[in-house]
Image 1 (cartoon, rainbow, N blue to C red):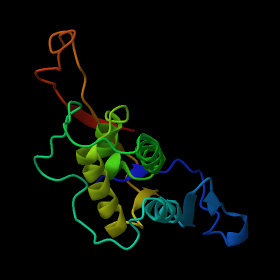
Image 2: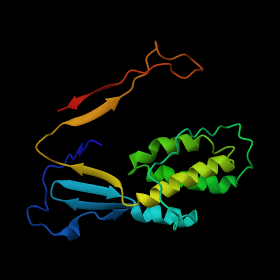
Image 3: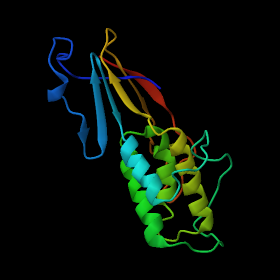
Image 4: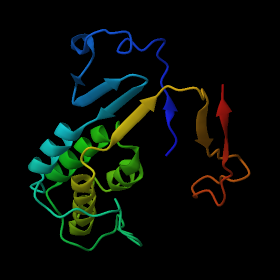
Length: 178
């Protein structure tokens, strides 16, 4: 995963300032600032989410989504408590702010908030098992000699998009910003 450039002018820690004036915790975001590097995690928030879902002591998995997992909106499984499902998905959507590794899965699971069933909840539980094993993961912003920002864009052009249908092909491009 490429590092993102931290746009801070100076590193006050390197100049002998105390750690007391630095941001440590804000709205569930845990911030650790070091010289040239800032790490943002949500370990405490994720732990509370796991407690709410009764998944705190479960076994961890290594992938956020099982291979060939294809739940659909037309599920024939038993419906689950919609309030609970929406609450967990809403909490996961907030967790995505520091966990881009789960963004796709959370967006995918958000599609089933209207008619959630047991198979959808099973995928949510799998994702929560992944979070158990990656509780301290987050975003790292570092400042260094190489001041390039690497990005990826996937545009959908009129040639690849048809109204009412998914795009058949998308063209990706990447580059640097200096």
